[in-house]
Length: 150
Image (cartoon, rainbow, N blue to C red; front, side, top):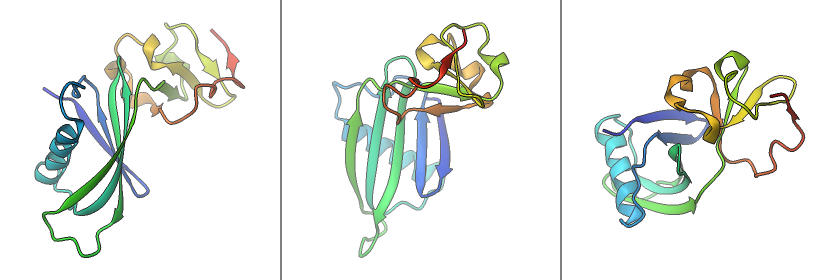
């Protein structure tokens, strides 16, 4: 069973796949197509046209897909063109306002407003997922200017 969370932010559809859905021995485009089919059939998204899809992969967490529509001009209802970018082994950080949820872990950073921890340090992310957000686009030096508090 696949655990899938969908979020819409501005003009993006973000799909969080919190398991190892992607097997890199298989064709990634077929797996992304399967996600699009789920979005259309189960979640009733009206998807047609040209899409940029960014795939952020992390061994422990799973996969995050960012789907952005580029154009739908002159595309019939059943045609989708996917342009796929893959980012392997990305650092993913959990960001929360309340340290209570991550207090039992080490390597916690603070920027004066939020607490951050590498998701690799969390035993079971699903237990605390609703109490914060994931950061996955930032560069590896993202925590450089923050204070390590624990």
